[in-house]
Length: 427
Length: 95
Image: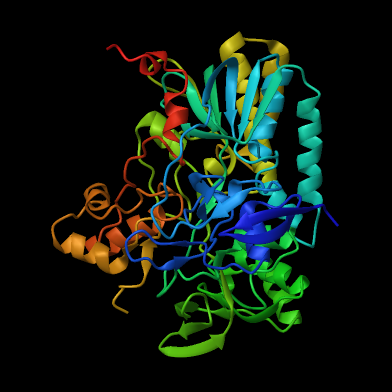
């Protein structure tokens, strides 16, 4: 067992474990409503557990609006819910650090790590920004599934290779919040403003899982499927009796992972027709008596301060399921916001089947001041792991050729990588 | 379903019904409806809501050629102290 850590929440003494975030510690202590919504004061619970949503904000050691899922639990900290407007307290020491590099890679998932490796091996000075406390990105989620530890092993292997290179600076907990296309890329690392001045920017920010729309979709107990995996990874469960609703194969995979962990699945609801779902995933669920209901959607969730029941609609017929959690997967969308900032271009989000990317890989977009911008992996469009790695590698090599000029050996590597592309996208 | 409890944007409490009211009031583009309702302007900065938001506007407008609203820094919550860090002229007032 990991080391117990005592802390205080709203005046109550609680205990978490080393490795917990404040959010997972509170969740395992039984808390479900973490905050109240700004206008309607409706209870809200952790939704993404990945630092994206605003549902788990609390005051930590006097500092308001902290995302508790991104705050490591430490012994002795005081956590307060924010029922009233939080009182800001000054006294923190803020610092500013400027780094210079040939290339800055934003995102330490498979695409970003591959890009950093390729650029560094070609001799460039690389700064790699990762918002999380560890490298891995989506690979950490794959590792959370009981079926395979492959993702986590790959993340560890790539991180080891990067750590062995002297010309890669890895900034963990560094969340990039501004990429103007001119001037430095700005990240927040704790109380430090980290500015990275680089001639090439590789955006490898991955994807955002999307929620589903239904009545009372804001109730505590509604989770994104990636959040359910993050709970499983901490030995926690989204609920004891769970409905899973999805429009993508990933949701079916998570339903299997929940079953594997001993969670009772009340229903698996898939908005697609069966012909569009992955046969093996459907087979796995059917074999365990949790076959998906296709062409169905969640009509509403009911409950006073958390999910108590989920009503599913198939056509005009409604089924009500008693459940204490609803795990949803509305598919994934490229995390293209930084590119949109840098280029001023909006991204189309309607054609979800083949979302066009802003800077179509493989190739650099050159911004106003000559900075080269490259978007790779899921941040460009949703794809698989091998594609993410190949695109990252191509971007790293291209950065070297663009900044250092022609080099036959480097060009040969690029040609080899490009041979694996089909229709301009890695396969 | 009247959409009064279907939350498109959780951070700013914007429901499908709010979007329909804003649209009826004449804010018929994602860019202007965002400003009118506050959708996609909260802590998540649209990471979870922008797709549902644009799809909802598209359904109201009966159009499919809509772009997402513009994206501006900061993309995630940043304390003002971090933004001001190292700005010496702010630390020593002129008078």
